[in-house]
Length: 402
Image 1 (cartoon, rainbow, N blue to C red):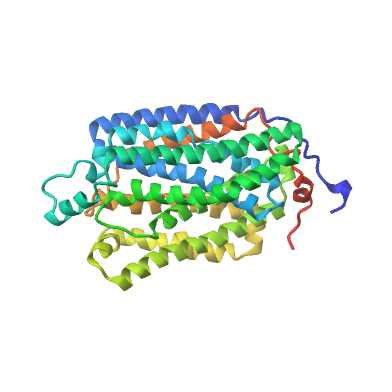
Image 2: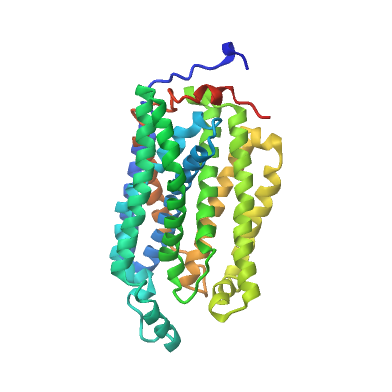
């Protein structure tokens, strides 16, 4: 690509998205209010619905944060034109501090170890006593504070340095981002792993899996890649200035990353299943057995097909990854199946006899999602939609597939 063909990337601060901001905020407020009403009617059902929605949308933000830091650690250049999108999604993490409060207020309806009913088996009650030094509400709350402080600090610092560079052009700010990202990525994976232990695995506190944290985190990371694919294909299909700068080669790379981590998610899922099957220990097999029988068996088969086999073979196609409509369709499906995967993880802890469908699943998803979208759009407004003075921006503009 010669100099004359480079697009003008000196874009002004983004001032659009007003309708999306107001619509997201209104949908979020309505969804959260309806979920609150549902909580008064059926607290356990509403809180389980809310937990799934909370983990779904938080996972997308943390996945975007991981992607930004991974690119920084790798010294990637091709991604500069789309980096601000990932930074903005990640910077919505502090919102989830507020959204976590309802789960704290209704914790005894969600996590059985907080107030164990005496009709539990004696072995389970004894096990909970052994785990009490870790599974107690005060320590649970303290760990949650640590998680949110780490995530918020990483996301806000990386975004702040990136935005400041738009005006100063200091190369030092790029070095800061890359130096922070290496230890930050380790901290993110560790804290996200323990958060999944606390919020999801402890729904059935007698069960444990050392791979569970990576399984959940990888699912969120795949979801964040799918969300970025959806945003990028949407921008390229419209007439926005950023959409004209993002090329088919940038889109293609996102599609390749999505394919790679669909495979990595499958590896995590298989590894967890294989180790539990090989060990054949009563404390470990209960979780898998419960999700492999009755009404949950077809859901598990759907996840196998929809989260791995179908997208894997579709994303092998170079043409599909470069097609706006094709990649958008696969990305949208991955976002749907990611929710089903989280549903399959959470809801059997509440009921094994039925799917536990409840109208608050919809209201909670819209409520948390609307608030998340509104927060991300709010953060993007008033800043440039791409890092205009990043030292590697020209390399990103010149990028072509090898």
